[in-house]
Amino acid sequence: MKGTANLTTSVRQIIKGEVSCIDDSFIIIDRLDKLNISTHSRPIRLDAATVGVCFSGEMLIDINGVEHQITPGKLIITLSNDIIQYRRISDDIKGMLLIVSQSFLEGVLNKVYETLPLFLYIQKYPCVNLSIKELDMMKSYYDFFEMQLNYKHPYPFQNRIIGSILQAFICYITSICINEKDLNKHSRNEEIFRQFLQLTINNFKKREKLNFYAQKLCVSTKYLCEIIKRTSGHTPREWIDHYTILEAKILLQTTDMTTEQISYELNFPNTSFFCKFFRKNVGMTTKEYRMSLFQ
Image (tube, rainbow, N blue to C red; front, side):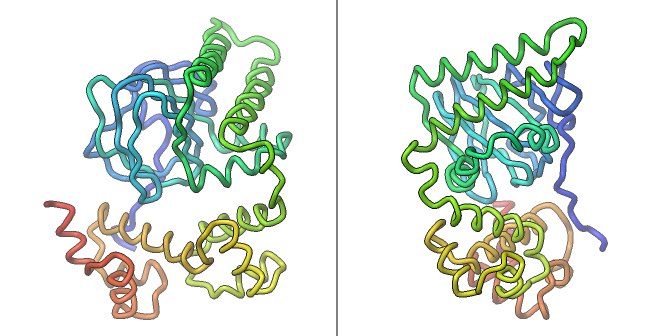
């Protein structure tokens, strides 16, 4: 359809200058001014996870439609397929950023089963305050990765060594974010929630009913509603609506698609139904929302 946004951005499009890397799979950025971003940048979706630490300055960033202020001592993590938009970046911003492709990450995570709670935690709290000791430890990991990547010639087992340290790095972040006592408290519930979110991301445009998700997860609709509400504080329908509204906002921001076209793109039965849905959740019409972007 004419005007449909392609939010997916290649990693190289957001980088300027030379960086330490393994192709586009594993990249260390030692200065945030190497990021090719501005406060006027459109929303983007990377097929990669990012782990950043701020040393000085500040940044305002939207992750999946939620605003976060990044200040010194903060760790910020985004996951593959998160929708990111930079709102404000101070001139004195300093920090380090690790970018890991989805395929590289999957090759590491299949051996780190106990880190599942970390990813559930990140979906709710992508920003974490670090102590001075934790900040120093994070910098040590970054320095190690950079040292390994800066050898003049690739050496035997380089990727495996970096992958092993990445496992340790993820485990360290998990220990910061999640209390040891809570790691396995609701492991079955958390796994259902993780699978549900992945299904939602892949299927929300189809406007499937809840029994579709329940059948895919081999549970009853009632049980699914109870588990998702207990684990996340939101109902399954609220999560589906959240991603639908987020996508609608992105299309309104980044394309010239009409309300009718967006309604069709998101599989609403008609434009009137979509307009009522949007106004109920956003508090304004699609036209008013578009106009607000230029105020």
